Length: 115
Length: 110
Image (cartoon, rainbow over all chains, first blue to last red; front, side, top):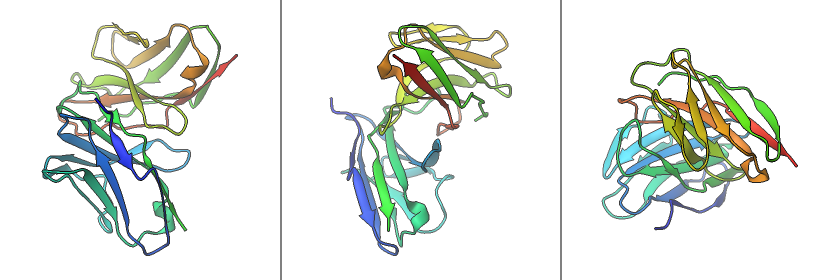
């Protein structure tokens, strides 16, 4: 059973371009979480999705950021008109259920660099 | 989710036990205590979790204080591969997310 997969692993964009980050959860997992990690900091929650639904987006910036988890295919985190402050590592995690004891399985992350 | 407090960094000699402390004085009765670790340039990985009783698994042990306001992650014999940032996280029954603090950066000295 393959783990959580993220691609690309590294992404370079110029200011004003769009960044699309993909996350394929573990097989059988219908819950996906996105986190952002700035250099030398801990992970910060962004959004929690369950197939085709956004459950909690309280950590997502109100502008330029969006996320989806379609019925078929990977979850996508989209950042429009990127700025230098968006440079960070973006991690996706998945879990089979939702609850206080559920383990989240993390992908290797996408490192976004905005020039 | 309640907040946790951890030391910024700790050192341990290889093959010696390591005790990583975490304070969570505002923990509620339904909060579970989770520990994850993040190796350099990787995503976090699960270590252990518990509610009230001490827990053991193949990676570590979790000792939870009787009043649940603190806990300690115990690595019984540190190896060089245990060098990582260790995060103590609280999660309640209604929470959709994990709150990662800054964690404890563990250095293992050969």
